[in-house]
Image (cartoon, rainbow, N blue to C red):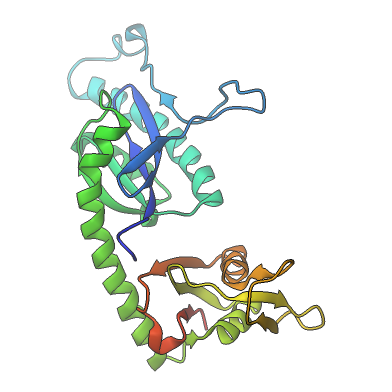
Length: 252
């Protein structure tokens, strides 16, 4: 994973409002759900107004009261998780979670997307700007992505021993067409131009130069992998020079 031009999500949970940011390196842009007319609709940011005091005051005091408030919070966090799931379905980027230890504990109990969360920052950013959050989160993400890159290359090397490794554009494309690519690795900035053979989908027609009407076959490949439920990881330039700049870990 190249630690420059890295894209990920930042989910900031607080007691009253939860915000989602799309991040590119340390630059964060808040996600605001709007309809075609630009009016707010269900989605981020999400507000938890909390139960009315009259709803829980008669129950009891002490632990039972605290349990009631925790259950209310978990109901809200389930809604947050559902909205996060919609975002991840369209753009399956890794997530860094920012919140208090208590909120993390409650979120861990309800989330269905724990595998997407690759980092955690113990902080309440409810009153911080996107700029400040980005400055504080980015050093953590650099460390995480370096370790993530190492683990991906280990998995790629191990896949060869299990006959689950493919490399080179043509071979990886063939595997993608068969729905066998679990994860594709591509050098950042690598491009090959051409067309998918209209007579044989599993065959690519490569052009030496970019001309009008041809496609970037790397973009075509990655779209195919994601359509088949696979994941995509970009790695630094020349990291895959021994593998024709494109590799894949196969499902079978």
